[in-house]
Length: 131
Length: 325
Image 1 (cartoon, rainbow over the protein chains, first blue to last red):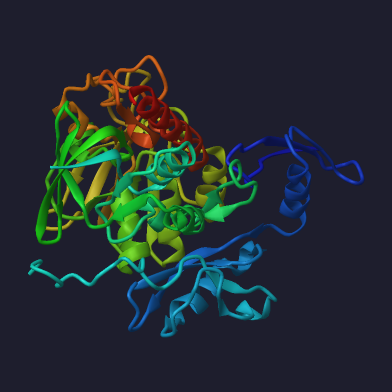
Image 2 (cartoon, helix red, strand yellow):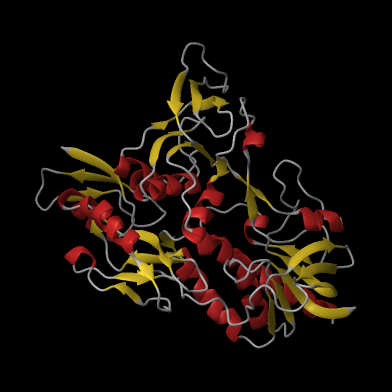
């Protein structure tokens, strides 16, 4: 049986043709080796990187964007979102800082993808004759 | 009036790349103007992954991609960054007026690079009939509300158009607990990337209606429902094919328009259909010394291409300035 799928590893979106009967499974249509990895993972245990944003308290930015440092099983996406929605970030973070050490016990870290401070050049509205 | 070598308008990916390339090609006096409170432009709200594969050979989120350029731009002497600065007037002599908190500044530049990006098409531009309730948003605005402001624009959503921002917002809304009742696309296929159809729509079993459009919006104060109708190859409604979807929110993801009103004001020839500058060469305009790069030159699919071509704009501006010495 030939199964068709679109590789989502990058914006190219290669259309993969997977021969499900051969062992190891044969993959065609991939422009790079990641296509083969994707096809195997997609058949055995589909995974996705989860990105979201978390609420802060007392920081310059109201929301800090986050991502999982590795893909997590697709079936756990909504459970992970429930955890992420509970977070109230009160400490300042730099880009790449860990927000949750072990998300849902999956062995995956949730990391900040933006620092919590504005540019150092930034001044709070109200300075000078702004108001 | 103060005079600067090069003024770059817009501190998103295009403006930052242009500034870096101009500096690296010998321009020593650069003013980079950005209307927001920080650099990065639209990348700051694009928290999903998929950026940087071509340029950095790794997969980054929007804020991560932006931060690499921010650090570089800020570390370069000779680039002055003016935040919360909004350009309001440009003349063909390259005199620029801009507003910043408490001040109106006038500067003359020897060369200008416009990196103003693009804006989203609205409901009015695709002519959807019906009432005019609240709850109709552009997809990018919904993205800002959710990712920057922490507000959910609605609970039951219909998305018009299958551009990438619309598809990405479909997933984002579902993950945040909203119901996306459908994506309605007038064409026979998606305008977005194939990967976004897979990971944003199919992953979450969101219905996508190709060859369909919204024929009518209902709702007195807030959107209450829409009529969806099938269309033929000429986009004419097929009688009897109409059905109704209940929703409280409509997101529009129906295309982008390059933002070029400032250079039009200066006399640059603009293509009335695309709103992009009429140009025989990449990043150039009908006025020598006024360059346009990134999504304001043409709407690109991926940010890596914006960076690549904006680096060229910086180099072109440097060559232009050198030739005038």
